[in-house]
Image (cartoon, rainbow, N blue to C red):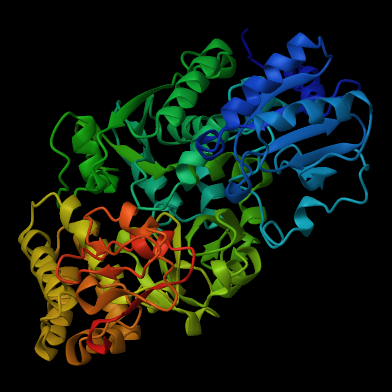
Length: 636
């Protein structure tokens, strides 16, 4: 099918919108992003498929992406005509029969109901009305997790089928592309991006319009645009979900970017560890080509643009744009000094514009709603929204999209509902392995590029790891430095040697051999590496050390002077003991001990051989009688 006009887009929209807002046929959508699949969502989908076929039911079944509340997966959306959408949570295959029976009998008492959706703002298409039924069930935006969020990047996630281009068109997809090609000049598009104040969502927050303008003004018959989808931060999965749940928004943004700077080719650089994202992006590219929205003479114009996918091997340093370009070219992924910038000499030495997944996803919205509209969201110099993956020791794990300028405390305590197991939040780590650790007493800080930088952290791509009272901040620095040291390309001396030396000092401290002088050397070395490294990896890798030294120096000093790990995490400072008054001699701990160092007869108290214990904590985890304790070593 060839789409060449606005009339064609509207025709698809009108014919497909009834799939999203069914008038007479109930529909079921199963959340099948990676988070849903990982906990059995695919089994739920297959069971629905099987029973609907066996019972010959007039019920529509399809896939959808992740709405963000990953903790509650598998999620299932049930749309009842003129009554709204019910979101059911933690659904298992054995729940399927009851759900279908409830639909068949036109009942309202569904089990495992999380919330309902009566209206949904698809941003580009406007408000979609699903009906006003199920009034005794809370609306989705009344839940703590969704309250306070603003969906722009995740506008379609968990609602539309990511494998169906027609559903994307039905919610306004590719209308911004039409507007760009038919009604706007490249400079007018750049002006809209400039008016929006959009900053790159990949970490540094560089103004998007400046990047585009640099590439646009370069005189060259061959130019490229690249989508940086090399999301490598531990605990971060914002981009993965955006690609799995709404791939066409990325493609549309890239085509607009290609038209604006005068490029005819685009490349999506994505890590091979994201197989589902790769699969859905490839399918979306093929769909866009089939509908003449990608390839030659797009929308009947003389503009030609194509997109290919390059899979990376998972090197963290390839998230840096010059290393990424080298990897696409088949070279070792190592950064290059700048200038020249990629806008001048990028892929194959041609002018190249690189933005990350989230940045591209914002483009269609800005073109549709105008830059001025976008600039009114967030704060001055920090406009729009930002998606964070909220993970770690927090109750509500998931993807959170909030306006820039939102206080950290709102994200952690209102949306995230605080630390799990009724413990206290000690800190958050923002910005990935090279981000900074922010203590809870500074959670009134706004989440924006400037404020986070002042605290010694960075926005990064959007990882937000919550740490509770049982977290050792020295161990946290050790963990993240181990990661960045391993991922360093080794090209420049400050990063290659400096990170290794800092890591060795941390090893010394957590092993119980630290000295006060080590903290002075550690801080001086961290600042030197930060100032002299070639690329962003080395320049930001010291952040966890610098921020923990700044805000949690007492923990370092406890390790050094008192030989105590306050959180009882570092193995050289703890021991596991068994209270003989509580031990029943059930032998469970002895059987589960991986090194078999727990002795004792059945029905009699057991003992741990401290000399051979590896301090794995298995005994503490399996004891049913609270007989096992973890205590500071010097207090035995």
